[in-house]
Length: 114
Image 1 (cartoon, rainbow, N blue to C red):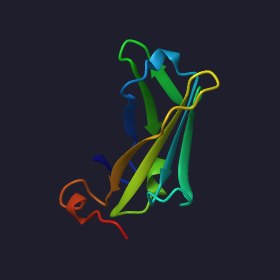
Image 2: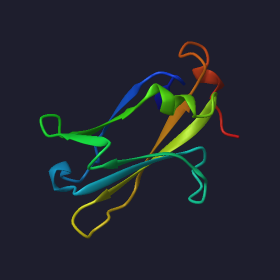
Image 3: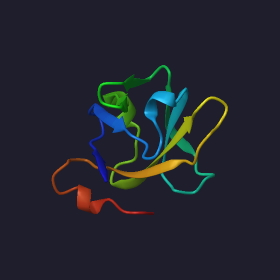
């Protein structure tokens, strides 16, 4: 689980198993407060643009600024969805969990689903 402290910058590396990252032409990261497909979007980032591809690492890097992490609900389990695109094809979505907490020590165990 990825841990996020509201108000602090967070750098995320995105690797998608089974896909040659150098063939990805577009990528979208969406953060929501529920795994439900219809849940409201809290934050979105895109490649090319806000997400950077680092060929030496074979990964995409996205920075969530302190202003962006500050808007995420505290002590809540959040969900990130990654939508890659290779040419006109859109492979399956990768989903990961994040925890937003008031402090990194002690608060993480309070993260829970609502």
